[in-house]
Image (cartoon, rainbow over all chains, first blue to last red):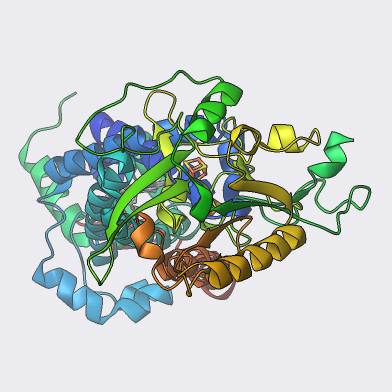
Amino acid sequence: MTESRAAIRRYTMAERLGHWFAAFVYIYPLLTGLAFYSPHFFWLAVMLGGGPTSRFWHPWVGLLFAASLLWMLGEWGADMRITDADRQWEKAINHYIRNEDDQLPPVGRFNYGQKVFYWVMLFAGTMLLFSGLVLWFPEVLARQAHWLLLLAIFVHVGAALISIGAFIIHVYMGTAMVRGGFTSIVRGEVSPAWAKEHHRLWYDRVTQQAAQTPPKS
Amino acid sequence: MSNSILQIKQISGHSGVAPGANSGAGRQDYTVAKLIDVTTCIGCKACEVACLEWNGYPFRETQFDNTYQTMPDLEWNYYNLIRFNEHTHADNTFQWLMRKDGCMHCADPGCLRACPADGAIVQYTNGIVDFQQDNCIGCQYCVTGCPFDIPRFNPETKKVHKCTLCSDRVGAGLEPACVKACPTGCLHFGSKDDMLDLAEKRVAQIREHTSYKDAGLYDPQGVGGTHVMYVLHDTNNPEAYGGLPKDPRVPWMVKLWKGPLKWLGNFAIVAGIAGTVMHYMRFGPKEVHETQKREGDRP
Ligand code: HEM
Ligand code: SF4
Ligand code: SF4
């Protein structure tokens, strides 16, 4: 059958733009944040226009990051819900890590790891947002309340480190490990074989839908 | 000449040794200090005026709340404040305690430890701790780090300011402006050793000739000693002088955050990246072989 060899749409243009917007508004606060975090990274702020400029934009772009996570919740929230199939997959996650994908149960549009990545980012983003708001305007706090600032710093740094850990894995998997994933989030398409290999339940769903609706051309 | 007096010892937010630090040419074998003998302060505020004049700031509106405290607090353009305290002793006698408040120029400055911006806070080998507003990012971590509640934020410029110990005057071989203006000789300036010496003599004199048997020097060791020191009537009760802490220390949370936590975090990031590299070396990529596709195809 000819359609089954044609590429399958995995992400719409809006999803891809939204994803790369999220990536940009995450990376900017990440780099400037690291600069504030450690003298060993302060050169990052220098490269990005200097300390005062970085400090001005970091919270604003961070707000955009929080907004982009909310947008993802609207766009992907339903797809990200963890299902029974995911729980089966999670039990076999060691096979996934060892690239023994043939021993994995089938999953939907996103696998358990991708879903957990999203929820971790949403959790970390929320913590970053609330602690960040406290750190944005310390001048409104009385000097006696400055312990709150230190608390906010610990939360902010902790959440940032959690997100960095998730992000490292995410970027590694999206570029080096899962071949075809990077193209999918840039061009929006995957091959049927890729879809079947990595997201069998999703593949079944979209191909059945396609079979029910007659081909357009 | 002036440069040799202001040799950099350390700067904030910098990894490794600060450029130009301890470069030898102007290495000093003494540090400077200001000694404030509160027992001879008359609360005339001449030092406040001299500070404003030297730093080019306008005089502020005064306020009246039935005390002598007509200037309520330190401000970003008000580095030097006399704090007036009406102190009642245990035997119900009354005393005015007046203290010139401002940056203490700590040997272990909490502001500098907390500051993330490269070179926004500089400590000179002569003991002066100075803010460089050009490099300041306005995060106000220094406010959190300071055990004396000194740095003040200017919301318009987003920069923090505090007493410079007149580093510009001291660098040119002059005494700080406040010291020059003081009419009673309550303010002294010189090498720290000389000031310690002077303080010792003055404390002995007070103990001998007055009823202040607990008179003593305030040079808190919790922050490594300070380059602004007080002679107090009663060293056991510094709090009575408008919130002078008894045992000031850099907040432990600041030390934790700027010390072990930073190393732990950096280590975790490096370990995370190394982990992915090792995974790739061990297991490699997940590739989908398009040739298999036909066998798997649905009929
Ligand atoms: C900056 C913050 C980012 C966020 C919050 C984010 C979030 C997401 C989310 C929620 C997905 C959907 C599925 C999944 O979790 O894998 C996704 C997909 C993807 N992302 Fe990101 N992402 C970010 C940055 C990046 C970056 C920098 C890259 C690569 C350089 C990247 C590469 C990918 C790829 C390849 C996919 C598709 C994975 C697949 O469908 O197989 N992402 N991203
Ligand atoms: S008194 Fe505060 S501002 Fe002054 S040097 Fe010490 S920590 Fe820094
Ligand atoms: S506000 Fe204070 S801690 Fe922050 S950069 Fe300026 S001097 Fe450093």
